Length: 284
Length: 224
Image (cartoon, rainbow over all chains, first blue to last red; front, side, top):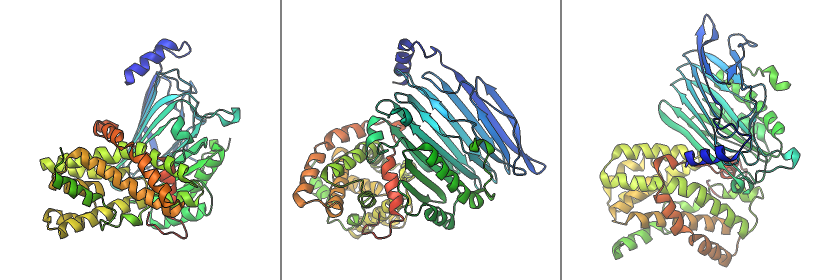
């Protein structure tokens, strides 16, 4: 099935590269003399990181770059992040990610995050814009050791509402898997097509949806996020076995992102034992 | 071919009168109605149809089939594995609690019917409705296909009864909805029973959102 789609896409779309970009990036964080360093980095193809910086002491902030600026059918990005014991890193992106329209081929993105005992990792990329007609399969797998800490989010913007574009065609097949000590903590496979985009059980025609994960989160963190949400529509939060999951729907992705930044500020002290220190790039 | 006795056992198992407390769970429907997402029979039908396609076919039924085969073959490791997968696929605390509570309640009932193998499942945190339901089906020689049809029917009937109370709908409108949606069950079961392991998994964003919002709903009748 996958191969068929890919061939169909390659044969019929002149604008899409016949081969597609293949890009791989592996990052390893380690704790050295009171601060977290990017201890190893391997990359292949157009996916890289800028030099890390330290706006809040020992926590390593890294901006991930994808110079082509968007992903098309046939592209395959894979990313491996490894946080060694005791390290603390925050990864974000300087701009929104993009999946462009496809004539049938599939774009792929695989992210694998491993967090060792006593390590903390924050995966906070800016939003991903999925153009109408894009076809993609994305897998994000998070493996947490005992005593590992993690905050992650995925913010999607479907179609380009500013141009009156909805998501009446295309398919975003998005897999989030969180494992703790080799056991599944949360398995979510969101398949967004025109039907799921419009339906009440899906996105209700909203162009933006987001999910934020925080582990470990106690009952008081849950209560604090519930209080932040208050009576606001389109926002929800739950906690399952110390994993907090906050979900939001909005017709504007900037508003959704601003909400998630507030949630992040609420959960961060309890979850990774740091007050919020927003990467400066978010404000630009 | 289902025997008369197996059919009767299935009818007992899927009856809304089965004392496992299903009537007290709405699976997010209560909040969806409260938020104004579902206001009439058409919207209730579209909500349930979406959940049957997106959740039941991709998660509950294929996992139910794996439980069934695991009980038949005594494959306890498979049972543990699929129990963990099923729980991890539940997207909110309330949906997980519902599955555990109804699974444990059914185990308690079966134990009361002298099916003593279910005794350890009364307190097992990994108990889910599907795991215990599959055990009962194997125990009573109900064929797999009928088991899956019965499981989906019983879920649907409970959800329609919730919609009748919450939206609210008239009794006849509720029965019409049930008749219409039940017509899709055979094809959905066909699809679910042929799904490969790697195809298992799903998510309904609106359901997950409604269910997590139900957890902080001020006044509510249902436990989910």
